[in-house]
Amino acid sequence: MLDQSRPPRTLPRPPAGRTVPAGLVAGLLCVVLLISVIIAIGLGPAAIGPLQTSRYLSAAIFGGTLPAEEASAYQIIWQIRTPRVLLAAIVGAGLGCVGVVVQTLVRNPLADPYVLGVSSGAAAGAVAVGSLGLLGVLGVHALSVGAFLGAAAASVLVFLAARTRVGLQPLRLVLTGVCLSFGFQALMSVIIYLVPNSESTATVLYWTMGSFGAATWSSLPVVAAVLIIGLVITYRHSRTLDLMSLGDETAASLGVRSDQVRRRLFVITAVLTGAMVAVSGAIGFVGLVLPHLVRLLAGSGHARVIMITPPAAAIFMVWVDLLSRVVVAPRELPLGVITALIGVPVFVGLIRRRGYHFGGR
Image (tube, rainbow, N blue to C red; front, side, top):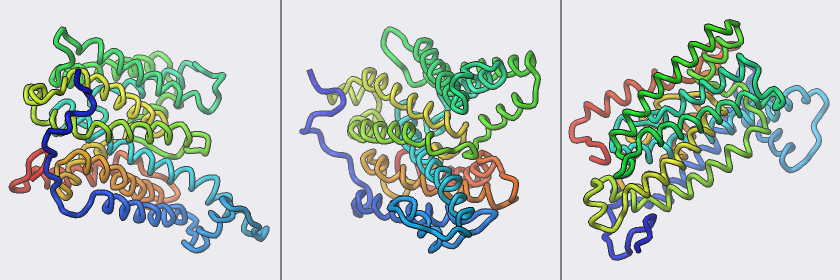
């Protein structure tokens, strides 16, 4: 029996696209990400220079003393902005990775991390918790846990409704996910109608438009661990995804049982998406546009795309979050508004680009 996650070594490797090593590109992007994080932590309604920001971060990480008059600025940097910016980077990387995998799993260039109804399930879970007072014992984490449980329930329902005797078929997955999305949105509307209050409305806006305003240090470890595990697993399946992008029949002729791999990666992407949505709400276009841009610039091999897309998406998300905080300060723009304003023209430009096809040039 062949290992379904690793095709035989005798199979030819897909072309790598550009000659620049993917590891080098990813490393450079990580350096850019680090610089972006430091700049984003310092900027805001109360701007703090990069050198001063670095000094505060160094004092927090490695220990040190600061003058008493700088205590307020230090608290802003370390307790408020740093977890928020780090969460933006983590969520951006996760959405970018999931976008790459989902577009191949369902063989649809319009697929994104939310196409399978996970975001609608998470929103319904969050609204139920916020409106009905469920999971109150969890305190400030109740909404995030409710959102994750809603996302998990949506994933299970999609899986049960889409599977057939021959396995999970891409088209059935998409259609089932879209259908259940409308169902969860209807459930949300019913909850808000029966329990009308301003908190419910605010919760709906939060989970449908996205925000990192509730970021705390306690919310980072779990979502970071889920991201790392998801990246490792999806990268190990990169060659399998290369073959699956050619079609299930071709993949089967080369020893890959697409149905088993699709089920495995469906679970991974569902958990990743649920974890990201639970801490940020639904943020569109990141998982849709960034994989296409990376394929266009770096080639279509999934090993390269999975290695480069997460840091690129993390950089994008860090700057989007910064824009949301400074454009109309002291108020914040919803993240989904900014990603749509950027993502729509970029995606239309990709569609109109002569010679560009899904998966490469």
